[in-house]
Amino acid sequence: MAQVLLYNITDREKLLKIRLLLLRLRVACREVAPEEHAHPLGYLLGLPGYAPSPDEAVPFTEELLVMDGLSADRFNALLDGLRSEGAPIALKAVATEHNVAWSSARLCRELQSERLAMSRAAARHPAKTSAHSKKK
Image (cartoon, rainbow, N blue to C red):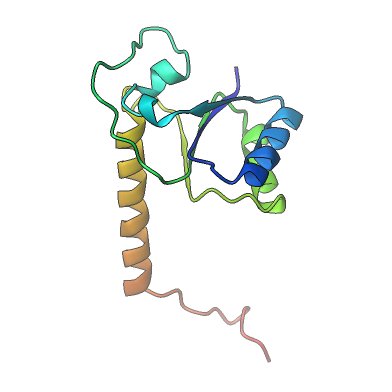
């Protein structure tokens, strides 16, 4: 089943745009509450073999979208739709066999770390302008 977990989308208009987009794409949606951030992604996605965590949640405030079970077409339509609807979410992930045991908080930390590393690398190695992109 194609599904998405949403975190910390506090702008009601943006949330409505995202929910309508997911409805059009026939993708199930679940808003994850801050007190659930300690639970494994597998549990939040309803996957067998995962149980709620007894640990206290470490809430985060960043917007996050986690996708599971989307075909390539739905995945691309979702990303395109978020852009065209003006509903960007900076932190996005796909549930994998490697991260479904992670808590939402851990996933968020990992994504933030990757984003920081990528922005630092981009700052050290600015893209070179190709001959095709130069204006005459």
